[in-house]
Amino acid sequence: MITEADVLKALSNVDDPDFGKDIVSLNMVKDIKIEDKKVAFTIELTTPACPMKEMIHKAAVNAIKIFIDKEAEVEVNMTARVLGARNADGSELLPKVKNIIAVGSGKGGVGKSTVSSNLAIALAKTGAKVGLMDADIYGPSAPMMFGIQGERPMMRDVNGKGMIEPMERFGVKIMSIGLLVDEKQAVIWRGPMATSALKQFVSDVYWDELDYLIIDMPPGTGDIHLTLVQTLPITGAVIVTTPQNVAMADAKKAMMMFQNANIKVPILGVVENMAYFTPAELPDNKYYLFGRDGGKHLAEQFEVPFIGEVPLIQSIREGADRGFPAVLNDEPIALKAFTDIAQKVARNLAMRNANLDPTKIVTVKL
Image 1 (cartoon, one colour):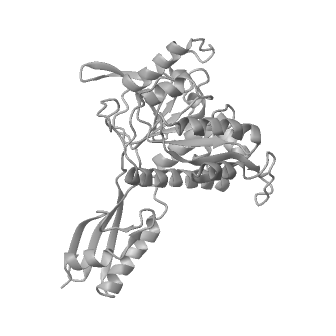
Image 2 (image 1 turned 45 degrees about the horizontal axis):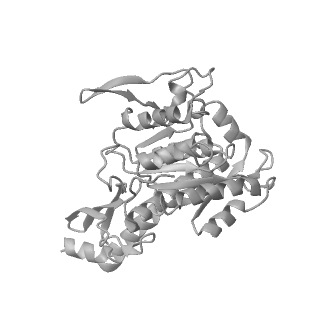
Image 3 (image 1 turned 90 degrees about the vertical axis):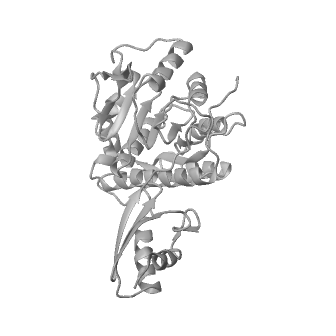
């Protein structure tokens, strides 16, 4: 007779490579069912975007056959429960949002919005609950990238309070100042007005339950950035750069802002956008128009992960312009680039939550 203890003992030989511990001690094995030689159980991963899913599945099946019975019929159900690093300070703001990821660069025009939108959709495609907050008050781009220009969010009653219902597209909840003002008019506001609007995106928008809230940051390291870290406990940051030195100089400033002793937001990794040019008629060719490996060198300098290159190809630009981001297309180069980045972000975030203390809201005067 196969017992539950036998199953747990066998599965204790299966390690999660990210955490360096076995899946039993990590409490990832659930719902064990045994009937003669039929063994069924669930492995609960820390993210639905886990790139090691197939490897862990295969190792679990092999463990049962090797350590218990080679003729056992093994059924493994792979699920995920996203770990959160929220509310370390007891804050009631966004209590149902598990992780908040800031995507910044320190410089405009390097592709923060492209990375943010494709990252959000790629995570949503894995089954995660995802939101995107467009924090660029003066240059919002989410409405165009998601094809929702001219649309307006609805209001709903939440426990007697009127709240804004975020727009939803491609499985992602979206909020942007571009959904509230006339797109033909410039937002001519002083800093306090912009930061006030941003705070309303937190307090007056009904985000509900989210595994990941992606914040598309504006350029620079100013009012908006300080308001965010003083309003929300940012779980981690993704830095976007292009290969050339002028972009990396500003990316360094963004990196140093998040790593400032008063702020202490963990860096989940560096993305190098427009890393190389690949023409459609020569898909195997790479032309490094802006230099090479700048993002990798930046990651090495600050001892943070390098999580991917995004090529300069026509389909990414076209997808952004027509409101259908590249990760939704069948073009293999762009799809793989953004899918890999999403997997690494989710993986690094899960490791950050397992190994570091929860992020706290910053209390600092700068």
